[in-house]
Image (cartoon, rainbow, N blue to C red):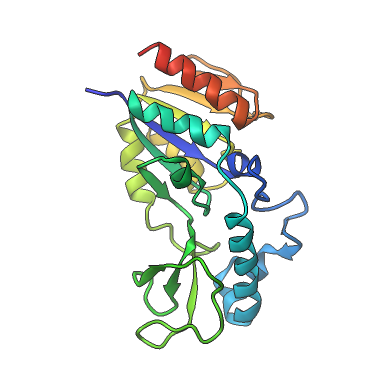
Length: 228
């Protein structure tokens, strides 16, 4: 039976493809206050602003490509049972070829009904005011905003509980509830943390790799495959 690998990825892996990280040091995202573009209150106050913001993010996403880290993770699938749980709303893992990806915070290339969170459709063009669902409600980005529930969190936790190996890539592990997923890992699981500025140190079953994702991930993948 193949060993199970759980991989938690964050903004750092996508940043190396040219996507801006979710928020800068000043708390802004592409010059916008997070509260204005990533909360239900912001949506209620100015739907046109929110739609335009995500339309620009979608255009940016369609202009970039998966990097060496995304591609290396695909190689693991030939030797392990791999589940990727990403905090990112891009599709770079899928475009690289990863088959099992759980998007905790939604997907930029999908839209959903404002009236029914389960009414979700693929969407690569701009979402405009007047684009309505079957219930005549405005379509919105399929993105989990601050203050909203994370519907796939239980699925992610169940995946981590079965992991033999856990990789954490490009995330500070400071944003909850995603950061809490590591607590579900079995006590005997091997843990790897790849980040150029790690905020934790190596321990008994935790190895810290202080490198960017595009260099650290391929190196670790080769090591894991060699040891199978």
